[in-house]
Image (cartoon, rainbow, N blue to C red; front, side):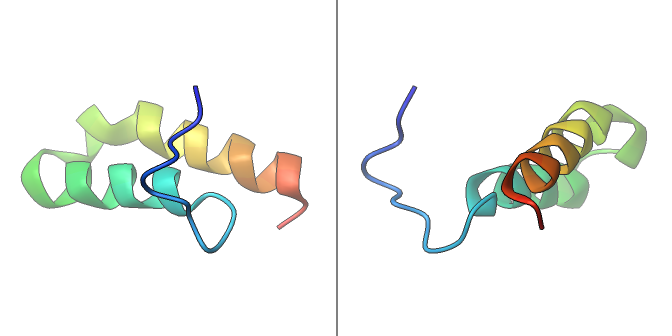
Length: 47
C-alpha cells in the first residue's frame, strides 16, 4: 500500500514515525513489531 499523502523524504521514515509514536504512548515491549518493521526496512534499503 502506497502512502501518497506522506511521501517520506527518506526511506523508512514512515516506519520510524510509527515506532516512535508507539514508543511514546506504550510500553516498548508492545512496539516490537514496529521496531522489527523498521529494521527490515533499513535492511532492504541498505541503511
